[in-house]
Image 1 (cartoon, rainbow, N blue to C red):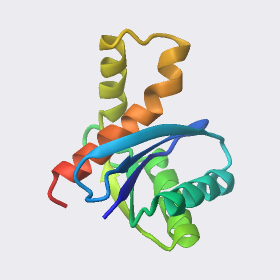
Image 2 (image 1 turned 30 degrees about the vertical axis):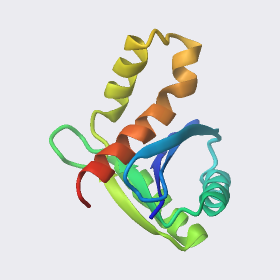
Image 3 (image 1 turned 120 degrees about the horizontal axis):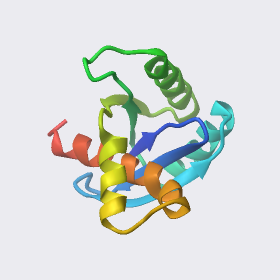
Image 4 (image 1 turned 90 degrees about the vertical axis):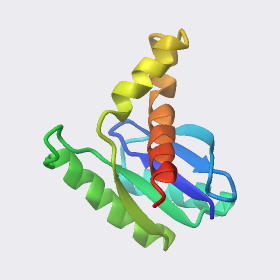
Length: 136
């Protein structure tokens, strides 16, 4: 089963797709856009083109596990994605994925604009790897 992870953001959204067996994270990229309807349309097209069967959407929680306004925004986006794609959308705790993504890119020598262009794709990959490694 091919799975797509989504790191939803205000200006950019990171996407990462697993291999056909749903074991390894593969391709990752970023979609630019702020309008949820437009971004969800792009995700729906990309998911269909790649034969994705499930979406995993990052759920931003506070460090104490509580949810704030950002989490509600992600839940709303998850409902929109489910409507547009007809796919199951699994909400996945994304605490510290962006922090880890910054560290990974810094260790790889990516700074400034180069880091901004990749950070959301790396965060989506970390969400996907977490989900795939959880045994679901």
